[in-house]
Length: 265
Image (tube, rainbow, N blue to C red; front, side):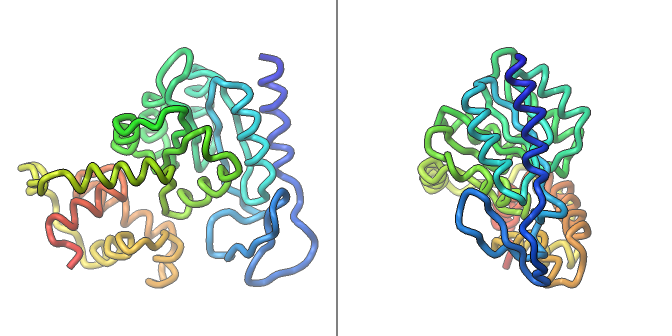
């Protein structure tokens, strides 16, 4: 336990390192462990305002590896770590964060429960599952609860910062093999028939329909805001209203439901 606390205390300090000197008005240079890359200033994840991440996993070795990768990227700061469901619940309730990376199999509880707690307490935050199991049912359950990422521990090392930046900017991050299998399941399903509750969904406004079409085209909240000349926060408000009206909990469900009802034509 002393080792875990030591890592948790050191990691945020490492993540707050100052960026390289030099003024770059349009782009910032990032990356300490890999070749520098250009990162547009309109995307979330800037040295002066890094993405805040919680890491919850009961395997201390895996957690240490993930923490080292996250804090090595100037676009990310690790604000807390937990090695149990109990510690995770405390961090969710007490810390300000943007993304939670979580294992589903914790020694004293389920990661599913913590995703539900997170979405209830901080609906704007994103959840990325990091699991040892490439299980379609677990993945679908996590997505139903609002997760926007599902990664395998043994195949995603070196890409955890990329996953964080993808989901916080409106995208999704799924292990490629699992994504292919999930697509196969969808292809085998017969045409879905909307339920009676779905048919009674509130109509979308013109701006909400416009935002939803851009979400379906793969644009992030920041990109949508730039194209519509509105703030990212306003875009996220429209997205939340879309979820409420369509009675869905994430972007994938919203796009799927809207497509079935012909709202994206």
